[in-house]
Image (cartoon, rainbow, N blue to C red; front, side, top):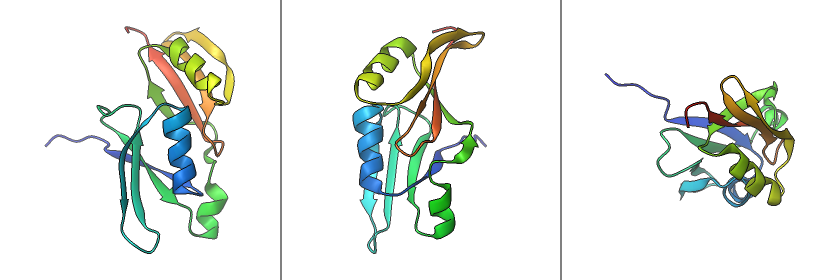
Length: 131
């Protein structure tokens, strides 16, 4: 039996503002936005339509969830977004107002730079060695 991680949930305050950040600023694609009534939606984004794993937004509808928006991994990187050109994506995203922690740098496993989503979650933009 083949297995993979299909979706990763991330807590958001608002579906539409999260969609806008991830699609307009971070360059992701909207894979699904389905409403099921009573404010419940299935919203999924991914770095590309071909991505094997997608991010699903979960609206923070309790105080416990609201307290964790933006800090699902404390101040550590929550997700790694792989790219074939870190410098290009960094420049495009920075021009659209994405907050980065430094500039792309060469590391033993490739080239990377950390950025934040609209809530402060940290993501790593990584161009793995071998691209």
